Length: 441
Image (tube, rainbow, N blue to C red; front, side, top):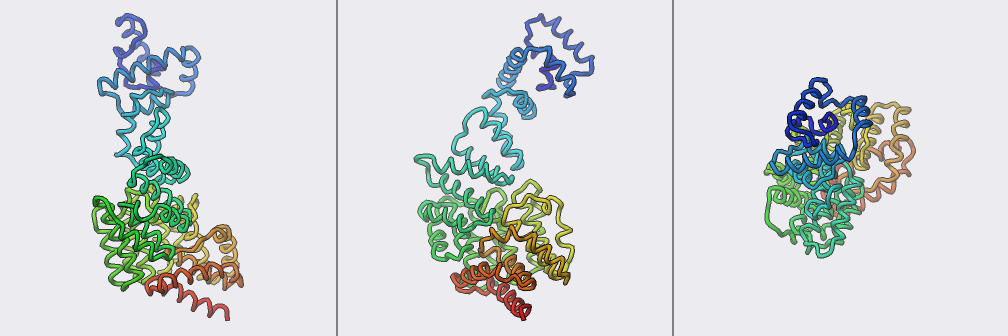
């Protein structure tokens, strides 16, 4: 009875079927309860009971309880988890575990899907959702493996294929490889992106490919939803930031955030909408507005989200530009200690380097530069990391290490030329160039 209660703490005597008469069973139940050990998770109690109890007997009793409660619709999520942790792999557990996914955080949802998948194979729709919550909880390896399995499915419809590509592409973007993400959308083609086309357009613009971005936006199909309308508005605003006026672009991008679902936190994307809007505002010198966007996004976020570190790093970056020399120290400890994906690590190390340069302490700057070496060696330039590239450029010039970043600066200039030198995105890099020239003299 005690062994069964480890998995089912609220067990009732009449749920047990241990081959005894009900009277003697109830008496035994009462005696077990009186010991004070009923439902105990003491390792000592568990080991003693395990040595004196038939595993097969306990397992069969637990399975019978699963079936009984499932039929009576009284099997709850906590009990289902305990039964799973006790080694029970019964199909009646899957419905309870799966039903709890939608109301769970990404981390919990990913764990629930892991449990379900160990009992029975997931369908394509649930595999996609498992990939998405895994990515949103930071487990990109699992997310990519699952997305790849969906992409490999024969006769897959375009909507699910495009969703799998988005997850794969967004994972590449988080790893600082936006060109690899764009390659995936090139393979997919504009005819198959459907409702995912805004994410393709954002990715193409991020590497300086305006033509493919336009083709993606022109191929936008599928029924509108709150998330897709917000993403389309954001993508159109980003296109305006390259081809039109900065005020108009910033207005459109900001409006994307005001739409229901416009922040895009429910889907794993190449970058979060608040981050892109904040970056555009920062490039335009609108630091107050950028701070407000990031603050609102942080207030609606939580530490289990894939956007949490990114938003806090942008918040710290804004603080650095305002002259706060403790911007990195004020970051949540989890962000500083990591682990961070390459895109976030680039911003963190560039900030550490930038603050060290501003302090005027050459020894501190050398230490910061040394700490950024690993991130710098794997860095790939895109439209959304020009600010950290600029900070690293100035530090390199100050330390007579300019050759270490020349290729990145050249790539950044090539990217901006491919976009037609849009003022909104070009101005900060030009200003970094002016400062670099002054420092080199």
